[in-house]
Amino acid sequence: GVRKKQVSVLCVGLDNAGKSTILRHLKSGKADVQEIVPTLGVNSERLTLGSLCLTVFDMSGQNRYRDLWQHYYSSVQAVVFVMDSSDKLRLPVARHELESLLQHPGIYTRRVPLLVFANKSDKPESLSPISCTQMLGLSSLSDSPWHICASNGLTGDGLEAGFMWLHGEYK
Ligand code: GTP
Image (cartoon, rainbow, N blue to C red):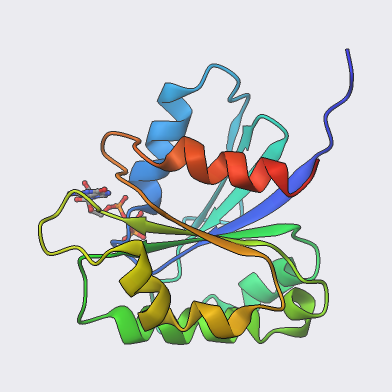
C-alpha cells in the first residue's frame, strides 16, 4: 500500500489536564494504534495514530523537564496542547507554558501547527473554546496554524475532530 507520511507530534499540557486519559482513549478506541513504547523515563509516552506518531510529555513539575522538551522542539511537526478548560485558576499557568513553548525558535521559525484540546468540556464550569482562545491569547500566535477543539477525554468526544484537522495539515 501507500506508505503514510510519518508526522511526529509533541503532546504536552499541565498535570491533571487529561493527557493520560486522552491517550488511554486513543489506545483503546482506535484499531490502528500500533505501539505504545515508554521512553525516557516516567514522564513521556509514545504511540502511533494513523500517520501521526505522538510523543506525550507531562509538563508538571517546576520546569524540571524543560531541557528534555527542547530536544523535541526542533524535530516535531506538530504540537498538541491539552488544557483543563474547567481549571480557571491555572489557566494563566497553562498560558505561560504554551507561550514559552511557542516562543522557542524550533517551533515558531518552522510554523509548527498547534492543536489545542479544551479538555473536560463536560464539566459545567468549563470555559468554551472561544473563551479558552481568548484566555490563552491564541489569536496573537497567528504565525503558526492553530486549531482549538472542545474535548472530553473520558468519552473521546472531540478527539477525532481535532486529529482530523491535524491530519489535514499534512495532506
Ligand atoms: P498527569 O498524569 O498528572 O500529567 O495528568 P494528565 O494530564 O495525564 O491527566 P489525567 O489524564 O491523569 O486526568 C486527570 C484527571 O482528570 C483524572 O481524574 C481524569 O479522569 C480526569 N479527566 C480527564 N479528562 C477528563 C474530561 O474530559 N472530563 C472530566 N470530567 N474529567 C476528565
